[in-house]
Length: 458
Ligand SMILES: Cc1cc2nc3c(=O)[nH]c(=O)nc-3n(C[C@H](O)[C@H](O)[C@H](O)COP(=O)(O)OP(=O)(O)OC[C@H]3O[C@@H](n4cnc5c(N)ncnc54)[C@H](O)[C@@H]3O)c2cc1C
Image (cartoon, rainbow, N blue to C red; front, side, top):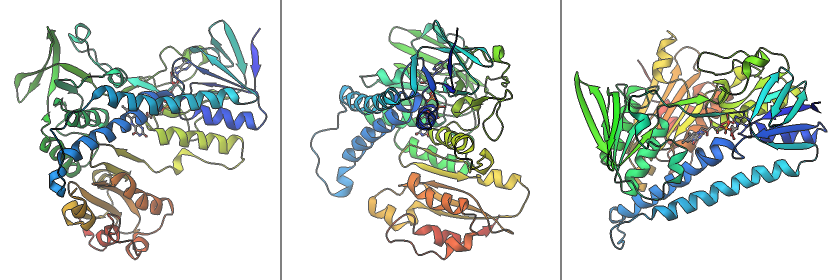
């Protein structure tokens, strides 16, 4: 006999818990299953712990730079990794316990601890219990992708998850993968005191970004002493004693780097391989991402997929936005759709990159005339006053419709500044509205109207 519910939710990432709360508060009987840590990636091995560690790294960096500001600091900076980890653990734990406590305190909500697997389109098994519902919501997230690289199994490599257990500063951290995860860990550990080498197969770091932005990011990292190897195709990995070596092909020759620790940060893969998708007839692509429509519904009626596992987002805010879309459609009778979402994200190196909408190269590919405005942070008073002048701002506009197509703010406060532009994009306001806005001095944002007054056709 199966236990019957009005809704079953698999996974407690960024969409499942708020959805459980909304359903339970609407008087529905809800079952939610979690196989590992409540709160999922963001809370335990992603955003929250990494951003607390980025904050520690920033503190170390600023103490080293104290003299630039006329401040006399004490002895040479030393990072106590055990205390960095303890601070990170405490902040993550508070959030994890908060998610669990909220779910367990909900009237109408039953929490199951264990891996859930579809038995049929209406049945899910968790351990020895079978749950049944006409509505099932998948929020199983993703994990680090590990390429079948020769020799990798023979060395003690790290992923974003196992990095969380490090309580020493590695002597030399090798990182395979020059995208968001690799760069955030790379800069943070450089600031903690590690030697860091990043090996990336593409000709540029964070290859989805425009070349000027990517080059500026590379400059920020290399200025801090990070060794960046581009066009570097890994061949194999080996180890002896305390040393790990990565061999790669670059410039038609085989090269290698050796270090004490290896982080593999080459992308993510969805946690759908052991979910029994085929037993429920749920369509997925060749990488395992569940195919959904703009309302997050799968090909099977009554089954939705939210968050990283649907391949439509990849961020905490996109997963939470998936929840909002589903809740609005099912509970509030206010139609919402993925089609209304504008892409936005940040890269938390320091200074951070805030991104909204299209890159310049994506805008060019549309084949319509565009205008571009740019300004280096060296020409922004607030950045100069703060002594943080690395990076640049760029805004891309449709020359005919005057619509803002996208923006990149790589610089101090970039993760916050970008929202002024993102919100104008949601408001569908033509750029002259923002061009005429009076902003506060001295801020980085005050230069947004100025940049929009200096647009050039490209
Ligand atoms: C190092 C790193 C840094 C990041 N930094 C940021 C950032 O700064 N900003 C940002 O927006 N995003 C960031 N992300 C991405 C962000 O963490 C994810 O996009 C976010 O957590 C959304 O995840 P989700 O809701 O899809 O599911 P997840 O948070 O991944 O949760 C899925 C849950 O489902 C559970 N589960 C899986 N399979 C089953 C099963 N069969 N049965 C029961 N339970 C199951 C898992 O145990 C997990 O708890 C980062 C990611 C990483 C790796």
